[in-house]
Image 1 (tube, rainbow, N blue to C red):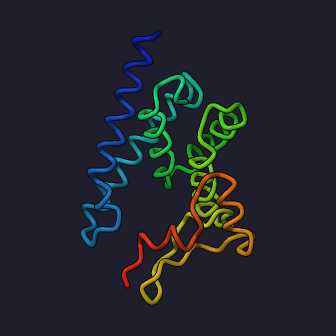
Image 2 (image 1 turned 60 degrees about the vertical axis):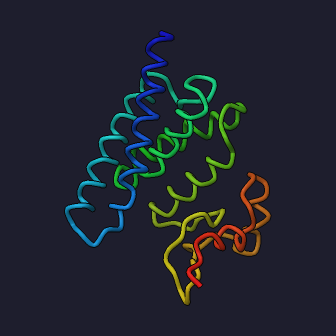
Length: 168
């Protein structure tokens, strides 16, 4: 089993590396590049689903910090496979409640899943677009409490967060 886990950890890490290398394709003007991104993220989500079937949520304790972070990234990018994304969210919620996963990462995945479901996000982690050179978040349930809720899970205030994306 330990060698199986080591193989899963290596596979998750390799998928995250491929994801990072291909991420520019997601918003490419070239439809072929967009399609390549969609195929890659779909393959990764399918494999993550198999891993979740076998092991549950890949926690740092199970697969190591890098591979656990990779699993989260794969779930984040499973935008066209909402069943897998929702399942990852449920498993990650359980892991966080057991102290076995990152509340910060869970907040990002929760917002992503809510936005993909056409609902308002909680933490303001998902950006809808740029207006006047500044990122604009998708609508939030309680915008007046956003920074308070972000602080609870270890995410910097929204203004600090978007400063890294600003084009002005």
